[in-house]
Length: 489
View 1 (tube, one colour):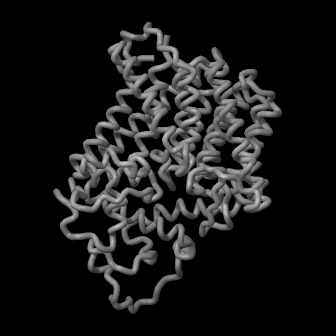
View 2 (cartoon, one colour):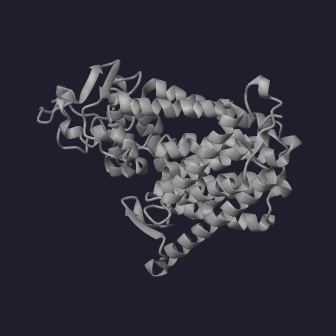
View 3 (tube, helix red, strand yellow):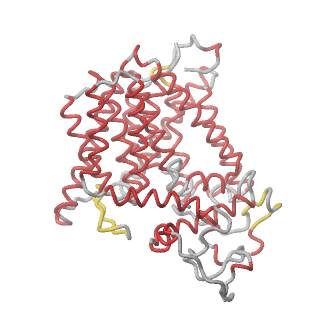
């Protein structure tokens, strides 16, 4: 699996089945918040890391994909400790790994999948187990959704948000977006296997279709507009593969079911439209002189220009009719707060475009935005402007856009490093997908992996899809199996 020509003939190391099963368990355990399973992901990632390191020391070679992961890890640590001046002791605290450091867990399984070869029959069994577990979780959540708290089980968590009535997630991520992304990735991968996996499903086809239905329904009822957007984008990519391929009727029926089922639940139309409006609001918010009506903060930031300070007399000229998009932003507190975060993050990017303000520093700046001290930043504004003199605040707060938070904290350098990793992933998966005629299951895994990448790319426009483990670990499970299927030799 090594990308250098000298090692094309080197047989890849077979992956221990026990470690693959641990990856599946970790993908679920990391989505469970604050319970007895919290230590399992750490143990699994640690065992994977030691196994990978043992192989690397023995073989004295590191594959290109692993080098890209390690390059990102190294840059993040340099940005955290040296550029952002966060004490190194932070790395041994639980709060760091619970929040800002979670992104390290996201990409750790790639080290394993790039180095090891996974038996495809074993992969199919593992995915069937993962699908069954997700279907059971979704079904229990739907029962509780229908019958109320009296049906609650110990791991069931209830959340009431401004987006609507209470949502029920069977022990899943503490946010509706995290749970929705989790369900969406499992559903996308399984739809790909239903469409292209043929006889490798390990379960009867009708049973597999029945199992995916509660997952897609649960995804819809989370009322996550970003996850639904990513889900439909992924289904669209799968439709493109169908159109460019054999155009089998069974595959088309599966894709139609996946596309129609969310609409049939009665919850999609309104929120898909709202998400389209929010997409347009992103562009409006980032245009200088665009929407300035949204400002949920009452205390002016010392970073805001004097021309925007409160108390300034209104312009005597008549105001134009409000744009519908601006009105939508003002009427939706969820969107308005995000627009404010996007605009602030864009300002941070303009101040330090090369290396960003420092890893994990976005929430430190945002949570102190109204009382930001003048000496909080060090360097040359507009070139390298580092947030070094702020109290460290570990939290899951983010600007709800992976591209903005990565560019804001890590700059163009960090964005380019992470993009190079994902581009490498897509190229490897495309190579296997093009050769799917030689191995049906490998092709299905590669196509599913590409669809999952598509979901992550779109979900990251309105969430932290490139850094949240509830999305990352199930995504890397599907992507990683596709990469393992694309090994050379």
